[in-house]
Image (cartoon, rainbow, N blue to C red; front, side):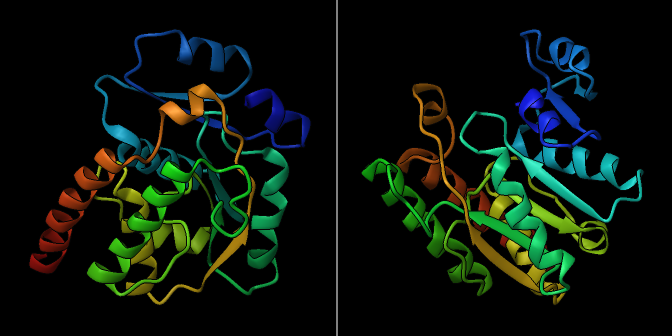
Length: 208
């Protein structure tokens, strides 16, 4: 994934090694990425929070978050940048559900159910709350607070965007499904667990 990003002109690449036991960090470093390592596994929310904070130190115009399970295509990134560059959006979500060709029905159903959760809890509409490909303007990234640690972070980002009146947009992206990428991400079981954590996050946000 790092090589794919580099060949498309992306040079400031930050990899968050979330307490892995394999040589992820070493390999990423050898490929020229800045590597930040969590001593303990904190989950995707924790990794995103660390990566975005580090990216802001570069004073970037736009930050892109990119899951590295092989499901996303670096060629889709320019599509996410365009609405921010035109001033039409502050936060852009790459939606697999706008063009779900090839998506297994079980994954389609799990994602569809997951999309109701941010609407019910936070009043936010989305076609793909669990996308791993997002873009933020510098100002938006600096405002969004990530307090959750797991896959509920996708819905939390949407809720933060709405609460802070950030302009939100979605663009279609394709998903690459392999045995490995299908072993990650959303499922019915993971979805129920995520729902429980989102309810807790809703209570926490309400009491702050």
